[in-house]
Image 1 (cartoon, one colour):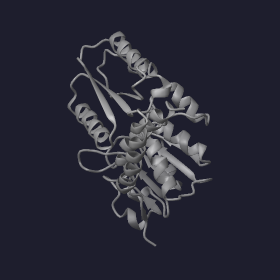
Image 2 (cartoon, one colour; image 1 turned 180 degrees about the horizontal axis):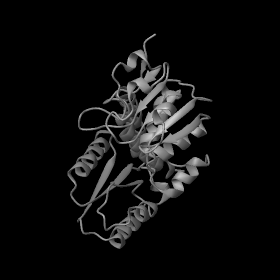
Image 3 (cartoon, helix red, strand yellow; image 1 turned 90 degrees about the horizontal axis):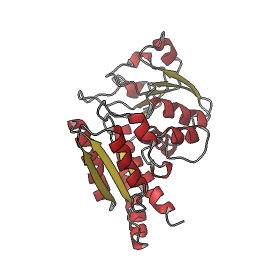
Image 4 (cartoon, one colour; image 1 turned 45 degrees about the vertical axis):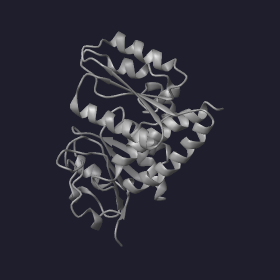
Length: 279
């Protein structure tokens, strides 16, 4: 039996149509879902990501407000900008583009975002609430992965899940989300000893380590669910997907798997935040 392709590109398109309809309903009620994006400095990749998010907002009928700050912005100046956005009732989501210049305390600025507007799922409080099963906006990439898993009716209860990566906005929240769905979770990273052996025991593997083809296809056991959250200039992910259709039960292609779900989840969570303003 051939593997199921977890088509994030298609699911995001279907979701986008639903989001557009809900945005239209809200707009008729006098509420325009609005995402504020903050870009500090002029990193080309960050500029591209922010522009992509702004374009997606426009396509869905949502409003985006672009805040561009100079690269020598201080932590205090950025905190003041975030505070003003927190206090603006017409803004429903705040996104601080990562990474910020080195002189800025990024974690302090992330945590200054109002949890009710933390649609990118970057605050410690949001992570803690999510981990404890309290309602919160999840980090967009792992939350998008969970949406894919649920859309394709993959039962992960009791599965041995291995997350390769420990970043605060991907690996760590991914592990907690899988744990909350009753998977048994192991977190690995680039310095884990005997990582090949650990991965070979996985029923579900999430590649989120940020290294091209770090996870080899011959490490993956038959009928494993394979989620590749990486994307690199070589147009590959963190997992060597060569021949994966003959190994996996289900897998995400690269590109077209996890990536489209990340930005779609950001839009969905901004919409939900706006809907909450109506009570």
